[in-house]
Amino acid sequence: MTQSSRPIVLIPCCIKTVTDSPFHAVGDKYVAAVADGARALPWLMPALGGAIEAEAIIAQIDGLFLTGGLSMVEPGYYDGPPLDAGTEVDPARDATTLPLVRAAVAARLPILAICRGIQELNVALGGTLYQKVHEEPGRIDHRAPPDQPRAVKFAPAHEVTTAADGRLRQITGAARYAVNSLHWQGIDRLAPGLAVEALAPDGQIEAVRVTAYDDAPVTRADGFALGIQWHPEWRYWEDAPSSALFEAFAAAVADRHAARVGADRVAPIEDGRLDGDRAA
Image 1 (cartoon, one colour):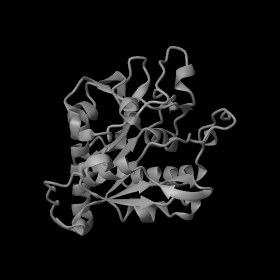
Image 2 (tube, one colour):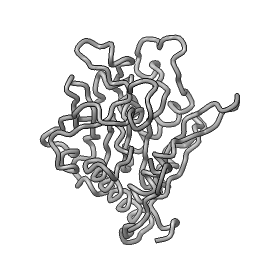
Image 3 (cartoon, helix red, strand yellow):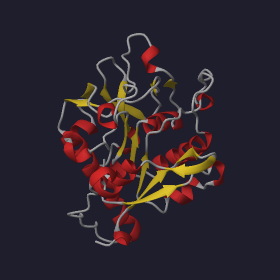
Image 4 (spheres, helix red, strand yellow):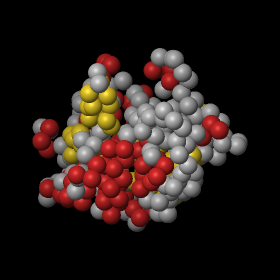
């Protein structure tokens, strides 16, 4: 298969400052997970905010992949209290992703939203967030251990329990499994149109689905829309539930691509996985 025949998955960028200059950036592990795990062509979307035409963009792609990030979703979008002084925010990303989410849901586009992405999904559809999950009564500390190598930060931190009738359990076949945990923010009030797919031991919502897609099989283009609070993209090929999640996303975006271009579903790539640090 040539790259041009792959499904197209949009990945919105964050704004990062490098040597006093702003850059539009996406972590390479996300790009690799889309390219290899979802067998799709990643398209990086600059964080242009109100300059984008969300519906026109959604019509040209086959999936939306929302990544994690170090910044917090600004509380003005969900009537939350002001953030602490010095908290990292990314208003350009917020202004880009939230309209894209709403347009993608309206178009029943395949969506996989990870970490900050699940928070954006919830806020875009009318939900609210905890700004510091670790300070909420009864909640555990979901943040990554500080000053540790990436392998330690992304190591399993707690279990999640998947909903018995949920799509995540259908995809992974697992009622309970261990996941990593690297977040400060988390879902407080669940948005209308979302359903809980997994919970942490402290009751924190760890995965959701868009219920508007429930009338289609999960591996079809109009049946896959999930938000995941942990990081399944981290060495996904070594973890059976994460591999299954990306396989389901791959099937959904391939189906969408076939419908969009009027072709048969594209065949899988047999040897596409990137090697070494780039895939890590």
